[in-house]
Length: 310
Image (tube, rainbow, N blue to C red; front, side, top):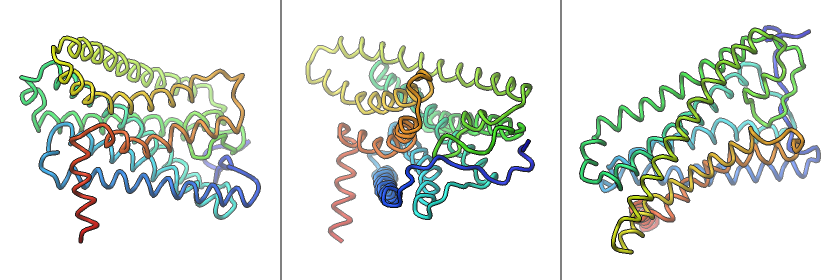
């Protein structure tokens, strides 16, 4: 029987056995990661350089881009390394760091999306109080709370998971270290009960944020439908569409990953789904925000034009 103190490494799920497919996965992940780095880097540069984006929305979008970059940099490099060098291993310490980092960034992103929903709610339902309710200090406090909550959530879950004795081997059914897959290797009933308690707290937080988002958008849509002019309604909807699309992409992929019935669970499907919720959203979020948001499109256009004209 092996345990966490004697286990030196884990085996990650391989994308393919054939060398040609492994190299294909490497180049595909390289392209995705470069696109994510470029897109999120442009968002960060535009928000930092354009004073028109020094707003609560721009500030929260900057934080969202940071979480997206964190998610990509946590999972993709190791997957690329394993595909390129035809290996599946990750060290015990590296696995713990990866599990912590991914949970930290994904938790912070969800809390930030909830705060951004509040930003849209105040902008549309209480526009006269926007400057009062979302001052610079208030925004900084809310963003700090999102990051701190994500950090504490990741720390508690990772510390508990990697303190458990592992007796079911060291092969993970995932291409990166993720806490639910590590828990499957555990044989500790007391530690498992502690993790169930932490999962209960996580579910409560996730459900609470979800209820807040749904309630906010109900109020937003009611306010938009009361706007007399069609142009005003279109402008209000355009303010919400990018955020609503990002939230929908985030929740739909995550829900399908963790709530799908075991009867439709098999390695190839699980691998595709895990890529869809861990790699694709960080790459698409900047595109979603820049396509339908004129406040973002104009600074990005100026930034790109300036880079090419030099």
